[in-house]
Length: 183
Ligand code: GLN
Image 1 (cartoon, rainbow, N blue to C red):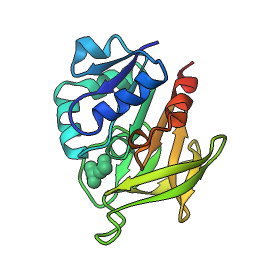
Image 2 (image 1 turned 180 degrees about the vertical axis):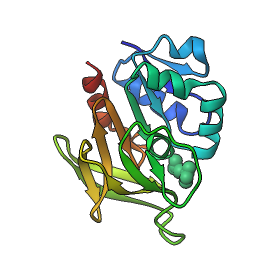
Image 3 (image 1 turned 120 degrees about the horizontal axis):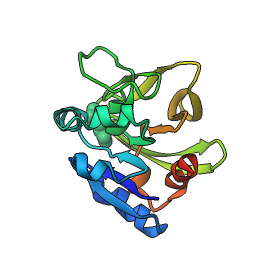
């Protein structure tokens, strides 16, 4: 199995470190040639507008959808995977049936860390950086964790999205979950 890490911008190296630590083969995905080699792809945190722009320009979004490539998005990655970005006319891929609001925690709490509880995993350290809030999920979406009643880790079919940054901890359990989902 090879996992691709979308290497446009953001926490790319951090995802690589986690996959390396658990011995999962991984490559950076920047174009069509590289995406063809992977069994699943990670969309890192960063700036969703920048990530979206390049993703579309290179038609990688179409490849992911057409090939039903399992996708794991963190923070900005989760935004890119959503079905609707509330209050903004911003393109998103609709991989997970959810409505999301960008930068939704407000200025004073832009970034914070807190312990969350994840179904099947247990306690996990959640690092939230200018995080979005998932405001609505469809019936087919499984909520694996919430914070203040809002979903922060969700799964639909073979897609997984976190509004926080598991790649900024050294805890690989959510990455392992994604690997299991692909298998
Ligand atoms: N605020 C960013 C956005 O809206 C996401 C931040 C992040 O990925 N840490 O795209």
